[in-house]
Image (cartoon, rainbow, N blue to C red; front, side, top):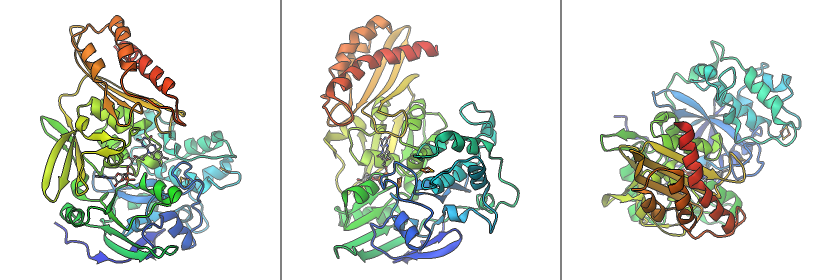
Length: 486
Ligand SMILES: Cc1cc2nc3c(=O)[nH]c(=O)nc-3n(C[C@H](O)[C@H](O)[C@H](O)COP(=O)(O)OP(=O)(O)OC[C@H]3O[C@@H](n4cnc5c(N)ncnc54)[C@H](O)[C@@H]3O)c2cc1C
Ligand code: FES
Ligand code: FES
């Protein structure tokens, strides 16, 4: 077991192989820190994770102990979260006078006009360039001829060039050459998590601020027990938006996203347990389709940049009625492991949400894991209805997990999001389906029951009428999908 990291009151950050120190107020984001030290390639376009102009690469641990260069939105990440970490910005990719292959292809194929978005595209593209599985993915019809997954750029927007030249640049990339120092860095372990405790007053208000990253869950739970008002931060993809757009400030933050105890996937005969600090990208990779319903959901969740930071625990920690994981997890009969210094308890997700952004979790508890019971239902689907196909929040989301034996429904679980103050199970529809023949007639008969589940409302994403209509047609869509897949 490695020795506990020494606690630090300033953050030591390696950017483009140069050491920097951060000792600003804890709500400072990584983008402001980088620009403050003169690294101005990363830009602020939106400050809310939507445009990717601020993208950088960070060295993250991979499942096999090596390093995976991971693109993230620096506008959302607290600078203090980079303590002890290594980052690369677009400035750090060139070697002296030689531009990086990604920069070269973007230049020669006309992938940049005003250039505002370009450093962000370069970082997302470079992270994909170095993705270890890319060579093998050349045969995958979802990827380009060189194995490049174009969805790795789903969080990057460009207002003036148009996307075709950018895609041409991506698909023209070869594999890293021998001697490429960024590729070589992947062979070494990623930096260990630092033990950070930064106290700094807000420069504008003089209010005190504190950012702590403990090394173990025991330390984190002790802090929560003594200060239940502390703000838990994981990937900061929700919290960063609150800070940047709504001016939210926390007197004290507790970073839990690198706690080793929250970053495992455990399998038993009864369940698969997902550590709460696993990011959506890590789950996508490590589950590799072994929970098909999550395999269908994750690619529809935000963008690659967001999925590289957003955790499954954070999605449930918000208590939001429009988070994407609850409808799928409700359909999977998931349970949450809630842990405090007093011990752990296991709560059915169906019992977790108690009101708008309210849950049974008490202030001193962390979500430490999500348990998916086995065996899994064979027929599953995740339907996300949003204004855009990708990188958008759901207006309505529906998760299905259904068992049919001898043409009769033996088990039906339907999770709903966006149609009430909380995510919920469509229990009346489930009861109607169970014991009925799996036919279009049954599905048509249940459509009105499903349409009446929840209490949808009008908002800027969709009207209540539209949400009800989406529920009404959803079961028929699920039936058609399953019949087509037979
Ligand atoms: C551009 C953009 C697009 C997005 N698209 C989607 C989308 O398509 N679908 C979707 O569902 N969401 C989306 N989101 C929202 C967000 O990315 C998710 O909710 C994400 O899962 C939050 O995880 P996080 O680790 O970043 O949480 P954080 O921002 O770190 O924390 C969120 C909340 O959860 C609490 N929390 C975090 N971890 C824990 C824990 N282990 N135990 C207890 N409480 C905890 C925190 O205290 C905080 O209140 C989007 C956000 C952005 C900015
Ligand atoms: S500035 Fe737009 S995503 Fe960060
Ligand atoms: S080149 Fe101008 S926004 Fe992309």
